[in-house]
Amino acid sequence: MNKVKIAISAISIIILSFIGIKKLIYINQAKDLKNKEESILNEYTRVLSECFDLENKNKRTLNKSIELVEYCLEEYGYKN
Image 1: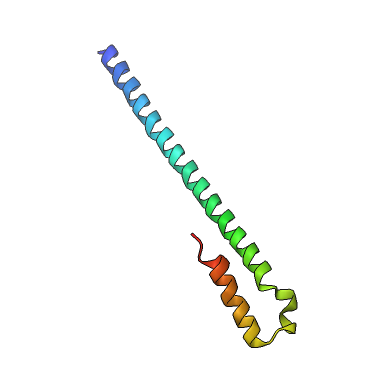
Image 2: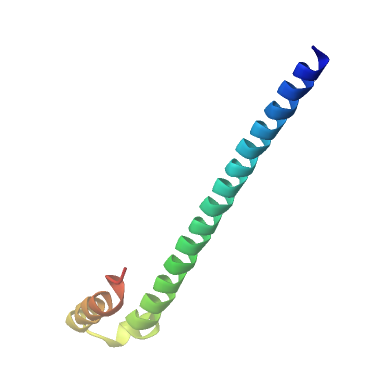
């Protein structure tokens, strides 16, 4: 009877360990994906900020600013 209890306990520990390892792998993959998405978003923000040239916005007319925004979005904003 003791051997059966030990075997059941050992199998239970092994199964729970596999489930725990699988969950840890999933959590790490989710963190990596989130970090990747944040870095892509930060890169798009940096590129678009440079393209919009916000420092010289007062030197442009409204129409030129709109054209610049359209150009930047077409050039850099819609990439996947």
